[in-house]
Length: 155
Image (cartoon, rainbow, N blue to C red; front, side):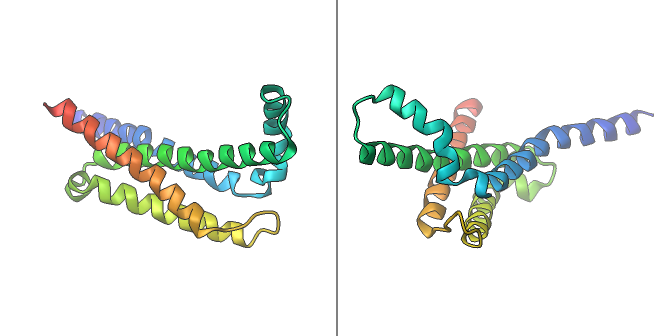
């Protein structure tokens, strides 16, 4: 009976570790559809920019909008890296535990590459190698923070 409870507990732990990761990958792929295009995000970003910068010329608003979108790339892949590092570092598979940072980064690179490739087939989006690099830098930044956090926690 104790063995069955342990298996249920292990399954529940895996779900709590991996479900956010899987859901976040879904969010990323959803955002890479036409719903995440600049024309669609301008519906809610543009009014906010006009409110904050009432006298800014149109060109400036477009530049700010672009910066916000590029920061979103960085942030969404930092979040992906966090979920991946959290899931893999807590794994019961020893190789995943030992090299969690490699597996987390490989997942970030893979999702970023698939995401941008998918966008290149969408007429309202563009796939960009620069965005893949930006995505990977967001992921790598989070992995470094996660690594430092784990080091400090173990001291």
